Length: 140
Image 1 (cartoon, helix red, strand yellow):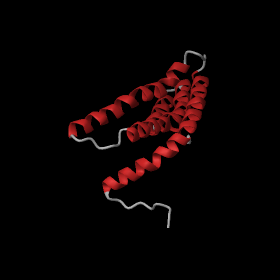
Image 2: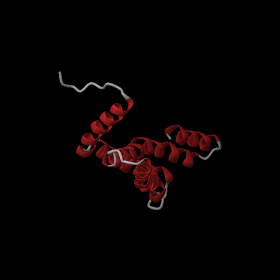
Image 3: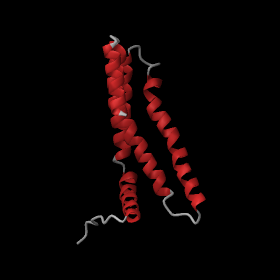
Image 4: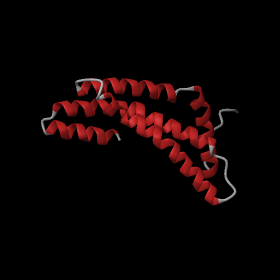
C-alpha cells in the first residue's frame, strides 16, 4: 500500500500537480503507520475471538467471513479518513498532515494496547501449532 501511495504521489508530481503529490506523499505515511496497523490489529483481535475450530468446514468458512465482515468497516473508516478530513481544511497537504497525525496516533494506541499484546502471542502460538513450526516459549 505504501508503494501504491508513493507511486500516485510521483505520478502527480510528474504531471505538475504539486498539491496532490504532497497530499499523497503525506497521506501514505498515515496510511502505512496508522491505518495498516489499526486494520491488522483489529483483524487479529477478531480472528483470535473466532480461533476455536468448528465441527464442520462450512462453519469455519462462516467464521472466516465474519472476520472479513468485521474488518471491512474498520478499513473503510481508517482508509477513508483522509478524504473526510479534506472537508475541514483548505489545503490538501494540511488535511493530509492532520489525518496522518490522527491515524498514526490511533495505530500506535491500538498496536501497543494491552488487549493486542495479550492477543498477538495467542495468534502466533495457534498458527505455529497448525503449521508445525516449533516456537520458543521463553521459559527454560
